[in-house]
Length: 636
Ligand code: ARG
Image 1 (cartoon, rainbow, N blue to C red):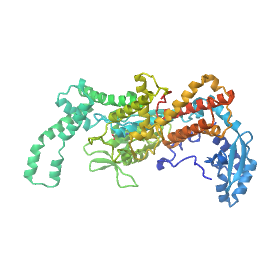
Image 2: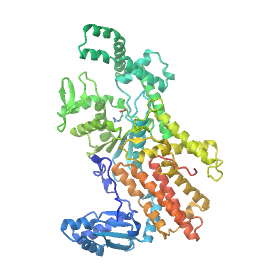
Image 3: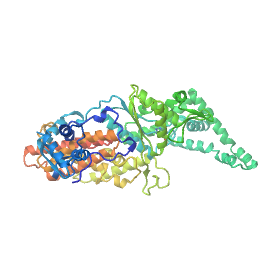
Image 4: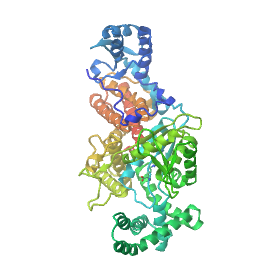
């Protein structure tokens, strides 16, 4: 018999269990039968073998053999050179399962199959539906979780990479909020340093109207400033020892580039020293850049707003202190005028200050680590940033540990995790580009998704039998937008985050298959069954659950596992577990709906009991989708 493992492979082997150090690792959902079985079998194993061992409870893959399977006897027997079946029989003789299981037997090489009592399942489910928060136990860890997300750069357009950093980060934040943790969403925007001063200086030289700036203007100025100050040919000529004549020629040619760079550096100095006029203009650049971010956040239904901005500039006064801490503790040394942090296990040191005194991206990130653990009290800090920054974060985290900055204010060790996500690819398996070969901006992509969603919803609404028939255009558009965004988010979050994925809107937006719109549709269908029943929510909620048919039982058992799934996402950061859970829920619901008439059930009690299963499935679907920040409309 094949058994579905309770946990799948952790996507991030270095952090297989980022919460293991925290008290939340032991939180267990009280309604999940696996929790109860674990306790009971643990006690029996202790009585038989005199040790405290994990009973290894697994959900049975085939309901024919029972609901759960207990595997511990096999490994225990192996350790002690005993007969596994005999050991399993001994455990079975002692385990206390009265009122919980109706059948329990040893099978195969020595596992124990458990079939639960239907009354027990319905009692647990009834209790769950009355408990707050779907039976998810409240976190006992009072430390915060910090999620570094979005990470846009001033004067630059958001592209699809920021899509992932934003929606993955927001989804994890939602999961931790659901688990009762204090969560900080931190947008570490690139808003400081020479490139920005270059852009600013160029706009000032061009007498740009700052009140009327658009993001396109900023983009142009940014790129223009890069081009204008580019003296790489001259540097190359020097490096290649070109003739003096050639170098002199280039010197003249690059005179404007030098002047522009001088100008940018002067602007940077003024900005750094807090020159009011320059600071005002700089703030304007941030404002213009962030408008698109807030727009995208609204469309995407992610909670990223002005309160989440803590960009590089926030840390500017702390960079000197970073160098000082590393120097004073002996962890940094000077190398030809620069400051570097050497590591014992690798050649490459981490540069934290340039020889001209300038600071680096890593210096700011070190200050940010300290801020997040010590000041924000984060015992878990998750950096949702492109996988290509892996070395950067490895260096930063290792350096932070050297000086003990991986600790909260009360000295608790913090877990620092880089969740390095893969790239978004086009149909040609290369980084996503528009037809004209330009980088896809996030706005283009979201506009297209919302258009497609609206077109599909409008097409369906034309059918007089559709529950959306006759809705106003604005309502159809709202539903269509939710569908388009669900398509994009679900495709992203339900896969292995560390892998690249192909952006294929046709597949993502389909109402069939493993898609966001499919789950929304399943939700809307249940909502319409409930509406058609004419029964009140209270009446449905007060009904006794009767789980007579296998399909009812399977659905009920899966509902009881929602809390454990949510805890597992918090433990592993694998958002795909939500999608896998929900699509299985939808499948089980379909099986139930086919096998068990609801509105036309034989008697009133059965009808109400089944309606209650519908109501609970609807609620869990909506809540699960909300972990992805996906809206579940009642009509589609
Ligand atoms: N702005 C950065 C970039 O575009 C991303 C910031 C990620 N967060 C961080 N703490 N470094 O690469």
